[in-house]
Amino acid sequence: MDVYRVIERQRDTRLRQIGEKVLKGERLSAEDGLYLFRSGQLTYVGMLAEWVNRQRNGQYAYFVVNRQINPTNVCLYQCSFCAFGVTKSDPRAYELTLEEILRKVEETYLQGGREVHVVGGIPPHWTLDHYVGIVKEIKKRFPDMVVKAWTAVEIHHMAKISKKSYEEILRMLKDAGLDALPGGGAEIFSERVRRIIAPYKASGEEYLQVHRVAHKLGIPTNATMLYGHVETYEERVEHMLKLRELQDETGGFQVFIPLAYWPEGTRLGGSRTSSVDDLMTIAVSRLFLDNFPHIKAYWVTLGERVAQVALNMGADDIDGTIEEEKIVHSAGTTSAYGHSRDKLVRLIKEAGKVPVERDTFYRVVRIFS
Image 1 (cartoon, one colour):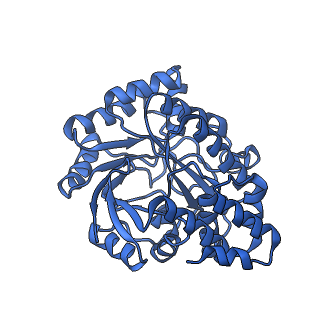
Image 2 (image 1 turned 60 degrees about the vertical axis):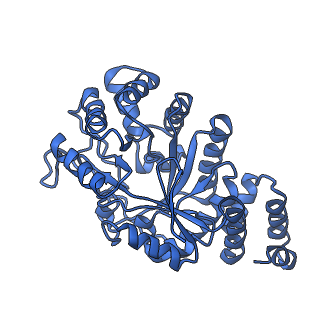
């Protein structure tokens, strides 16, 4: 792509100036990020984002053979944006036994899986030992499996019920076999928004502090942003700015994952984001989060086709085989429950990229030329 010529011909002076900053490797301001969101020029913004992505990752697009396990949907917080969490008395409530969890891990292990991703509801009756025990037993039974478990919201809850610090909780989990933290629970850091969609769960600052402590302890983490509900573009940029600042401080984030809001079955309601908004959010995040090595196009919330396009607009990761996922599916996504390694390879090749199977830490397992 002749990105230099496209920037030179850009009639919007501000967009041209932003493009020139990108080419020089200069950091975008919050005002720049907001202008990109409001510009409506997806083709131009996506081109800039893909140029940045190729400087970092070439033609590679990553995926992982993994499994997501949601041990329970019982949750005391009952956030209005969530269609997954229910009360214990709800007829839809479920709670997997430890043996059921271990059987799911075994299925993935026998298929060559390298990661298990454990997140779920926050049951009022679980103790700290319950959370730690799940990690410990998975690692004991499958020592080669990477355990990526419990969001910052769950870590905050563990600290609250046990009256321990975040550091104490994370050290216990690390000693039990925890390898990494997922990025869920960030939603939008804006307190205005959180009062509407999730008034009782951990605050944005508490989320960031959990990740700060995890990074201090050498635990790598992911970061997310739930968009498309009641937040503004300003609040999206503010969210990314806080993540960028923490990454400057610690360097512990591996990947940023924009998560599109799905409204079906939620009390919050609303409508699904457009594909244009999805792609613009991916592209702006690649340009703005200059210190994040990877941007993920999460096929579960985006759908396969939009995720493929996103791989040409700044994203370099499509997530993984997953096998099953209940949280977003509860809110209406029609994405298939799981993909084989072969299907992910095909999706990436169809997008014009080179598929790379990775592990949790973005170490290359296999390149599919």
